[in-house]
Length: 314
Image (cartoon, rainbow, N blue to C red; front, side, top):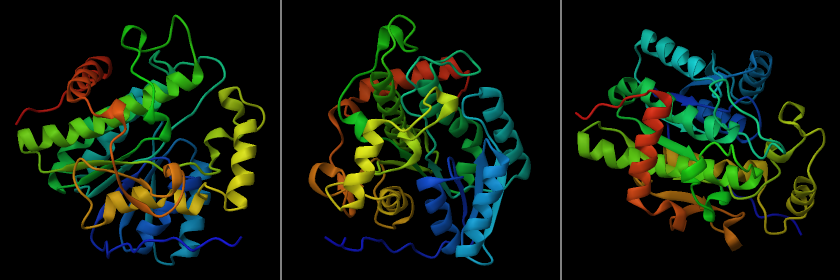
């Protein structure tokens, strides 16, 4: 059965500066392309400069004259995150859009970041938490919208408060769910604190549904030498138009959340099809693990301490 074409309209972003993590391939590259085509200046912090240059070539092929450039970033290193913050603050230009999109998923064996955190918690959540802290002055200058990409994995699960780094008993999927729950709680708390302290930024959440992206594909650096059975099934269902989205549709909720004039602060956007696995993007109810403001405040305090990142109270 042929798919119904799904898309959204991106408003004119001329004069806006957008930063998007994880933009060197997959959904992130698609988001960066659409932002650049809408007139935004797009900053792509990447870990692999060769992949980044290839991504820029792809963007400029799709959007001639695109304003796009690379910066160096490894979210699994707080030193790298701080260096990017220093570089962007040195440039001194406001950031109007920040899409926290990069992530890693389910290494079969426990791995750690450069700072000793469990890899998924450290990369998906703590790295982005620290990044927002380092560039907060630029976000405030741009009265920015911050969109943080979570996952259907945040629908269930919990924060392993007694063992955040999974040192006692590692479980790849539970650790991934925790990282995305923590990240979602952070995104919602960011909006609350901005309102409370007058930072002038707004923050919301998105999730891509389920689509054949690179997250579950072969990743030798994560200890995954071949595609998982899950990603092979996802590719099959997606190609046949059964329930799931595509890489093209998976990027749309984040783009809607980040650019649509009607997108709400503190709201959650994802696919609106059955099970929220695919379909057109729309606002959705928060997953139960994301609804506790007490949990959000707690993970914020812990994250400040772990990353040694402080946020102003005025």
